[in-house]
Length: 210
Ligand code: AMP
Image (cartoon, rainbow, N blue to C red; front, side):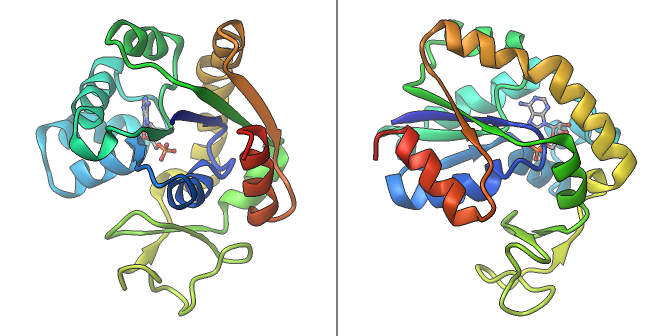
């Protein structure tokens, strides 16, 4: 099963991807996590991406397409994968199609900008493995420590309110048109954000016919 998770920054794509990845036994490919790891490791891709990310802007399409084509060719992707945070523009979606990378379903998580602004202030991520938490909704067992790897939980630079606003603008302008793009291909399934993570997961699995 090859899936795309669409949705605004903070819609819960990363959190839902983790649930689906276990449920469907396929890997998640998060360009945000791959880029953050690249920055941390000081790779050429990381050096190229950092300024864009800090400003809440999109990293150039060719960098992203390079990352994805390389990643989906790996062995663990042969039964499918979940793309989290990619494609982000029509140009990226077209480039994936051109590269022969196809999808079975596209899930769009629908949530208001107001809810996102509230939510982002509580988001924390593991600086080591990228796992995502929320101070209220998805707290770690020990405050400040990742349940999965023991890494330190930090607030992302780009989760600060001004940057979140910029990222929401970019989402509405560049990414939201992908809904029509995939609706035309008969792949789009819209799922309303629910009060809890578990309920949203259920709604997504239901939309996927599970
Ligand atoms: P995310 O973790 O998905 O919210 O991504 C964090 C930041 O990484 C974004 O604000 C962009 O700067 C960059 N990024 C992640 N995925 C993409 C993508 N598919 N296209 C362009 N930029 C991306």
